[in-house]
Length: 54
Image (cartoon, rainbow, N blue to C red; front, top):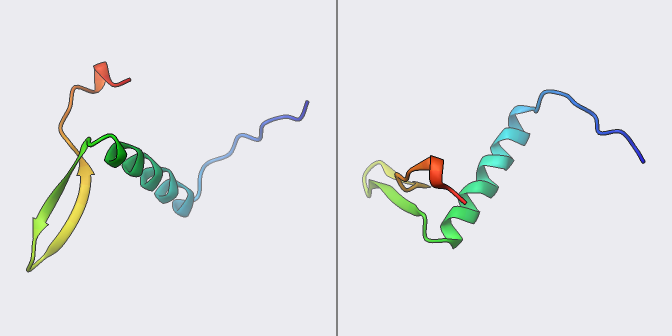
């Protein structure tokens, strides 16, 4: 089997991981819309107890 390369993630790779996690949370109805029409909106995970996250 091949070896898994360990290296620091590039900024774009970190952004991609965050986007995927946010999408998964959104599909599970675990996100909320934050912001307003004037400043714009962002979708963020709802405040939850991360210790019980499954």
